[in-house]
Image (cartoon, rainbow, N blue to C red):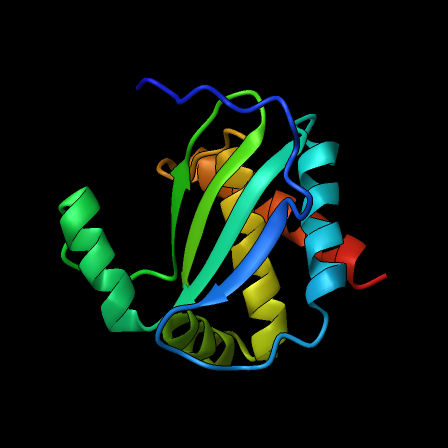
Length: 150
């Protein structure tokens, strides 16, 4: 995969949040952005530019079909644009996050943070296809969630 050349200047706001076809409050957006930068830095990957897009199940399924040839619902799709820094887009289904939070018995905000950390970890090079990768990914997510909640 060929990655685009990055501009030399770091964006003023390296983490940005967008809402596509859903609406909910993100009361701690600035602290979440700082935390996501800390996750990347702790993984030895500076955060260059991260776009977090919240959308519906149907919107994310359509992205999954069009870009990945997968016809199923998921909580997150990550699009990386560079290897040595965190530079990419996270598309997150607010519907799936809400359902998963209810299933897991946790608050929506906690599950949302877990999914955002998951996406950043993907941009840092972690996978989740094998059972061994899933164990590592979950441990990393738990570690960074504890860091957020301190």
